Length: 586
Image (cartoon, rainbow, N blue to C red; front, side, top):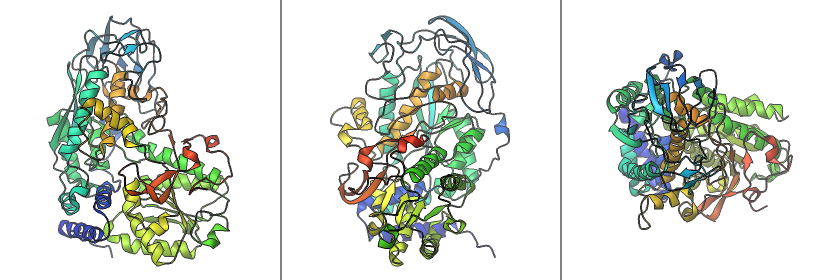
């Protein structure tokens, strides 16, 4: 007999009860991280509107306009669902006729080619190979200050002087209760996050080339409950909010992917149906981005790329070798037996299957009984975690691959302790504060897809914030880098899109991103189907004694292999092959 769904009151009581137990066990900052991730938990669901040809998503068909002087017949890189942009030649400063996203004719002035000698609007001496701003390795190549006619209202949410971005404020009773319980340890308020985001916007508006326009973020209070949406409930609220973004806010793009995660998968899918670009898609596979092309993009690694990196890591540096990082001596002296844990929804199972297939291809087949799923439902975590750990122990799994949300790992790791089971863990990275919430006995044997957090004072996000404000001002939200990288990604694409700004030319701006230098979050690049720019990562191990650069607390992820960066889709970069990772000081 099917279980009755939890009522709103029961869910709220469950969240409060869980937080109360955690508050008695952990420090305030760590509790804040748990509360933050509780809101982040990923439950992909089909939105209330089903995807049927995306309501003719590729409205406007061919887009005509000049992106750079001298450009001829440029094809937009991407998949078959992505519109093609035909770009006629035109000298800088000449008048060019193109099309708006609604199909009407637009006349605008062609910009100079990127890298042309001149001075940018931010005062940088532009030339071949020079970036638009000197403080970001992720900035596009420079363009001399633009003068002329930008075509005016080239798209919904775009005028002659403004590009409107929407931000949905959170409206969840459960979230409010959780944040109240955690106090100052929780992520900051929407007001704090928006204050930091708008500081970055002011800096970017002054320095990036937007062809006579400026970006404006308009926030609104949504009807939807983001926590319920993450549980597959109240999908009508997500649909109503997406309609508000289009009809009332009149936004070109939504940037609600904030620390409180007002943006959810159902909400983003509904935005696509409303023909509004969404910057989100947290950890979802490329198939999802392709399905909703050209409306979905993310500055965070997509699930398909993450799975590719995982397979290359395991096949080159772990498979068919002893489980030397396990806590059990018997495991340390025998070849690895992998067990995979992943959420039971189709989108994340697609990523899990990619990992399983990859292991099989390199001769380390994952046995079916060791490939387990779980429901992302906090009320079931305790029972499910106990069952999963018992199964892994009985099946002799030495090495757990946990493609998991960060809350369930707390239950899993503590249940492993209770069952005297000490495997090694290959787990999803959720940051230093979250790492402290897991059993430290278990996490002493944990490896993740990220390295040492960069020193704050030298980090790009922090230095840019100081440029945006002044030396005495500090970010209001502790997760301010989320705003920085999201907006830097958006502004770079807007500059590359050119004056005739439409969803299709924005997609071209995304895909035409040149390979960057390596920064705090590795290398970014564009290219076909580059819906997310991240192409490399580090590998790290958990240290219970290291001091974190993130918050100066004890307990942090530390880089393996002397901080080496690995290219996700290049197996050769994971050399030396068939050699154990150098982690835990070894």
